[in-house]
Length: 140
Image (cartoon, rainbow, N blue to C red; front, side, top):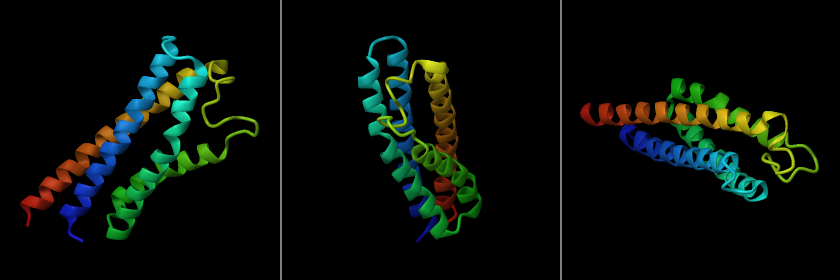
């Protein structure tokens, strides 16, 4: 597979992840401003966790198979954290985002901060993949 195809796919994957995380950030912001109630917001947020993990796994797999080891190594910790957080949901919770717990212990601020970090991560990697795509197209 040529590098141009790989980086075009990674650019698409990064765009999807960026969109998912911006959606989650907007939903958390709406919850904080009381535009959404907690059960509705948590339901929306819990529905995007698995697509985020799947999309990120696809990207990491593509990087692994094509031998882009540095990009692979930089993406592995993020997917491991996402999987760990998904697997460590307490029994009795409806998901990672629980309406009964989201306002306790400053969890809302913590979730917003985590999503801001993920948005920044995906913006940086969006431009890395874009630069790599352009560079691979120019070097052919």
